[in-house]
Length: 361
Image (cartoon, rainbow, N blue to C red):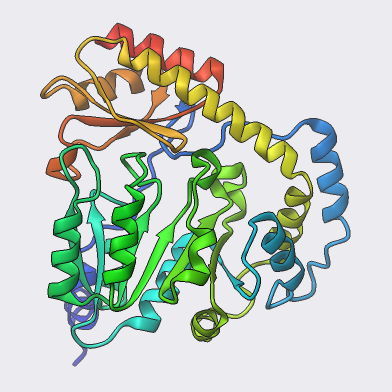
């Protein structure tokens, strides 16, 4: 006699998977969307027309180039990849994190990362049956050098992920501390530079110096979030192994063609990034002038701020009621109690956010 459905699910699905919640994306219909660190700017009509012309010649009846060689070559130039190093592409950086975790998992293998940090590191560690080790950041969200080195010594992680700038805090970690982590780690260190377009700092040039270093980036924050394209840069000795786990044809033909086209207009992407950087500084100053808020430094395209005690959720709901969707981080970890995070939008969106926030305060 077959087991009832609920019992069958519980008997077959790993308990640590059943304990998870699926990644949640808030409904944003009808709202000014400032919750997901997206580039708010679209392309001008003439660029869109040229892009659509390019797509007309894409053969949808054929599988894409499995290696995406033409796109990888262009990315090597655009991203200033060091000579002798290569790129592995993923369906967003999430897939690349998963490839790494699956390739490195094994009994008592650990993934280590500072907290609060990017939530997918923890989730993918669970997916891949890796032990997850979260090391608390300092109260100012800086990297705690002593705690990191102690945790590395204790857990001997197979991989350390460092978001640079960090998500959700927005700050860049101290370079000397990052260097100490790379040198102490017995396994890989992946520096996740998802927000590199807004930071003007990178570990890409350090790849030849450290054989255990990889650099990960995404095109999502550069205005191409809909393409879902991430890239992992490292020595071919590492990437050749991870490539064995990559599912065939993971980068579709439309993404390959669109990303190549976008990179041909890198000046436009940089102009948009510069507008976001400028908007970030203006938004930072405006938030710092509001009473009761603690505003944290950011080198990303978002700003984290702490509200008066006990008011984060009420302010979040008030903003949503005014048509503004930001990210409520209160309750996600004790370090983020009373914290909200806002993405830098257009000038009009930033003004609407500030107006609504002032009214709610």
